Image (cartoon, rainbow, N blue to C red):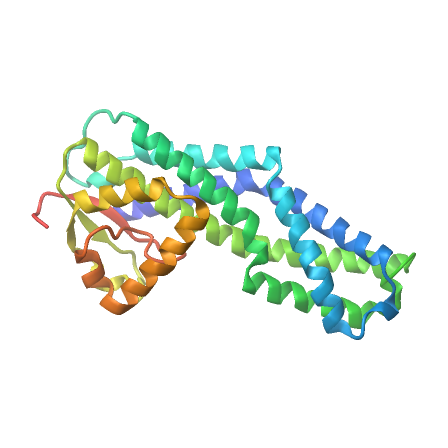
Length: 295
């Protein structure tokens, strides 16, 4: 059952990424074009060194990428992918039930609409912002410094066709590599979150009282102590309800506070305190299953 659940998780993540690729490609193209326009407006002598050049150009690249990810077409693609994943885990999936007979039918409720809308808001936010993160910025700056050193004055004004083409290629490749890692990280974490929330809603509808935490092979130090531990459903459901009313910014701040609590208490005590659910951290693969053991 665990292997089947992991295969389905991989399929849901892959499907989401496929839906996302056109939007990421458009955002890359917009960001590279913005960078080339910047080069046309400036000359080599306006910058003291490669550091100043990179520091001034990267914010324009990141801003253009983010704006493109917020366009109507890309937003629709993200929302369609989110809805497909959440509805699958809420209505069709039975992996949380194991050998326990699941209800024949689950009903999509107003609570699910709130959770689904929260997931759409959050993914639009995170997929538009990952380019601004420290890791993305560090990689982007390194590429721009390298381009300054390699292409020099040929980048600016009318420039050199060879230098501009090399710049376009290198910067586009850097953005693609960032997207491959950072966007997948967002999607991985999002799909696991939606799976947990949907399965908690399933268990609530079926009037289950307890859930069991399940890890996968190679679980991290945070998650491995939670394997097989039973916890009460009611606090987890209450947390889903609370989270579903948050804005992306509020949820970001909530995670920071929860991470502090988790570090102070340890993961086992944090689970016992109520409300904890997968993912416990980015790229977490843990899941929940229905349990008839008393928490």
